[in-house]
Image (cartoon, rainbow, N blue to C red; front, side, top):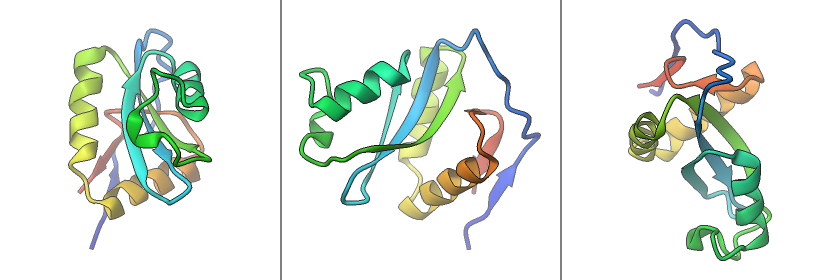
Length: 114
């Protein structure tokens, strides 16, 4: 059984957050996780097939941004990205569902999937 613990879920609207972790759902339902300093720009790159877009996402559209999380710096973002990439697909889906149900922007210390 997969459980999602919500720990002190009061998202920090961190205006100083310089980095973001995001998850994109492809047309084939695959999930792609990445980090960036500008989600709108990065998502547009992925959507348009820009040379800077992830090769993995090319030809897998339409793409949907299903999750985003604020992080303080690149180091924290990279660590969180690594942790999320180690989750099973089902655990990622639980994380996404919880995020969408709350309808909020998250910070890394708000959610823990076990």
